[in-house]
Image (cartoon, rainbow, N blue to C red; front, side):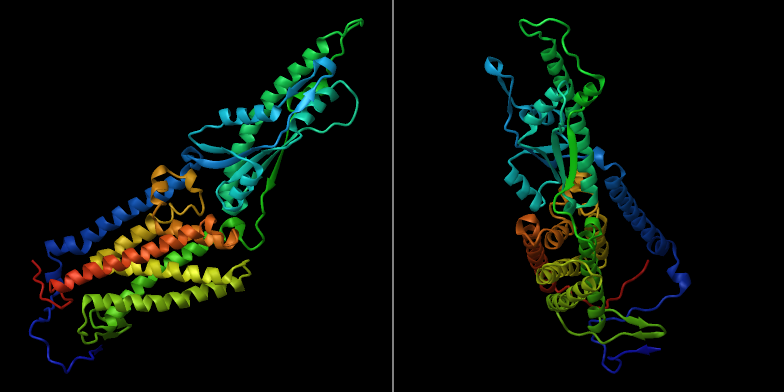
Length: 460
């Protein structure tokens, strides 16, 4: 059954109805290449690219580490050891700081030596994955531990705190823990050797006017001196329940990206069908409307308007679903507005690619939004733990910008410095580029007379 709203209208002389062909005529040698070989080649290339991009970024994140930011805070004020004329000032915190700076591989970890206020600001803005904090009484406690090895009494081991930033994702927390534990274990060993030698040296000195053997360090005390530092691991601003250990931001961003890309395809196809450029099938019903006389610029502008309406509705749907699933959302208005902006940016970009390149625009959108977008998003594996070419892609890939904005809204109080500012700026830039490119190219097509018409194509 065929429905044609323009069945009674005369066919314009410049349009020629394309003749039908038999199956035998279609399956010639040249058409075999077009029907079977071309899709096979395209799919092979896409799947190969997909496999490389997705497997490369998850295969060995720690081997790909580069510039992984961690803060280092030294609050130690030092201590005075000895008595009378034999006193000396020691600063074990400074020694530990230098040992960490020298010991951490600079090509992998960006260790930022900062004050406590700046460290907390970096953690709150999502600029560092964790912080190593040396307390103000570190040297004092080490001195007490050394004296306590030969003098009875209650003592406490000096503490170094390893703070993690769970709002940057579970994978980032795991890497921070591993880096911190490895670096601090080596520092603990070095401090233990130094402290043991210092205590042994002090005990070997016999005070004037005394006789008899010098006091010795017991075996239990030597064990305590060998590993003197107590490493405490804490979370900085733990995430509330309902956040999926920091994954809800990634999946919310993914939903926006997919809705923008798929929405562009649906708007493109349904609008073209309504304007008569392509047919539509509903089961056994085949509908092909009469062609509307509209320019390419006008067609694209109409699709952009439809995409704005769609974005307003879809953003509201996602917000309602998140609320029904009890996701903690402290700034629902910010989430709705940013979601709408991202949907428009992704949708307009997708529609522009389809208007400029036609059917190949589908493949371009898939590569841009899915194949290159997800691995470079930084939502599951930190971008600093992915191959460097993904770090470069993250500078402009839509998925990373959307993720930064959503993460800021959900986990960092909608702080502009935590990624929302960049997300908004890049979304507006994406809309501007899509508008300029789309209008420029479609206007060029119109000026050249490249109208969308049913032309006779001769198959050889």
